[in-house]
Image (cartoon, rainbow, N blue to C red; front, side, top):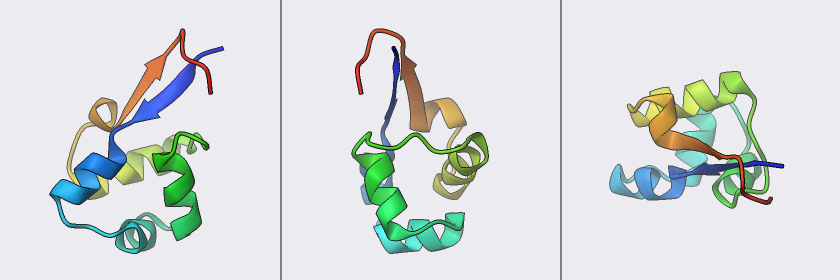
Length: 71
């Protein structure tokens, strides 16, 4: 089974956005942002697009699918 990887923590840090700010702007809890950043939770497609939009990058820059990866 594959795994979704992401660069959200790094992108968020570059933009000086806190986990809480990202959560508020996306419409999720801070705990959800933490779980996504730690690759423990794969967001819905809608949430993934919102994260990318808030960070100002294309979806594929935020999230990558690794077909060989394990969760």
